[in-house]
Image (cartoon, rainbow, N blue to C red):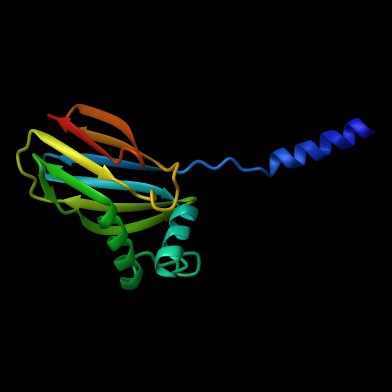
Amino acid sequence: MKKFSLFIVIFFLIAFVSHKYYVSTSFYEFKNDSGSLQLTMKIFKDDFTNLIKKRDGIDLGINKNLNSSEIKSKINQYLLSNLDIFFDNINYELNYLGAEENDEMFTFFLEIENLPIFKSITLKNSILFDLFDDQQNIIHLKKGNKKRSFILRKDSPINTFEF
């Protein structure tokens, strides 16, 4: 009976200890037909909710409308202060389009229109680095038939590619 009781205690201890991964995923896709760069970013709801509550005092768990003017403004401000894109060392500003809520994730949509012809692109993504030291931002970049993927971390939030 002692072994069974010990098994039950260990089972419950293991079952309720969460191993948390802090990760976001961003898809940067160049659209030749429209001459734009479209960025789709997925971030876990609980992480982003904690960030906005800590930073701006807004509880996204209560305020469900991510596209209300107040919340959209706060999200836009945070995203644009943590995302940079340089084409041939010239910084281009992203336009924040809006957000969706899906299961455990928030999906954010951003875009740059009227892209220049360029040889290199530098991406900076420091999303959630101010909240989690072990945050990892997975980046997928697609231009034509070229695809690249990499991970940005707090100690290396920037990556440059030649095309």
